[in-house]
Amino acid sequence: MVKISVLYPHKDRSPFNMNYYLNNHIPMVRQKLGAACKGMAVEQGLAGGMPGTEPTYAAMGHLLFDSVESFQAAFAPHAATIMADIPNYSAVQPVIQISEVKLS
Amino acid sequence: MVKISVLYPHKDRSPFNMNYYLNNHIPMVRQKLGAACKGMAVEQGLAGGMPGTEPTYAAMGHLLFDSVESFQAAFAPHAATIMADIPNYSAVQPVIQISEVKLS
Image (tube, rainbow over all chains, first blue to last red):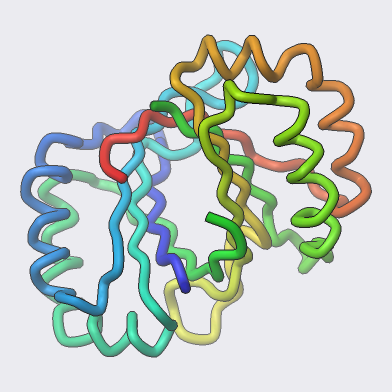
């Protein structure tokens, strides 16, 4: 199983519209990716590891797929539509990481 | 539910001993944190979002707790022991983030 993590830096405390993300963006992404996407998760940054520090990421979205190839095949046809929705909830460019799930 | 994410930067391609992490560090952390820890997950970085790019993080570990207070109460007594084990599998300082789980 691979996890695609989309990490939105909490840069300059740029606002992140979690309401829009959860209620508009994520459902749209789920619909576009279809059955290839085996799971989705969303987290909102609260704090860093040291007391009183800001979180590194304002929000994190995660998508599960059977393989990198399965992700690419599902994502490519909708990449432009999905990316074009980002400015509706965030002004920052997300960090994207593809990982192998070792323990869940 | 809150998630404590421990992100190990893939800096200078510094090696990360996933075998030690999965088979020694994570079981030790699980034992120390006890029942307050509601779940653990581990991912190994494969690639960045753009073709041919390196992942931002070599590995990510995640711990689930009912609340920030529950995490702090479980972690504080064992923080020194847990942190002292890091050099056994990684030479980098992890980025730690506390998040609220919005969708899982």
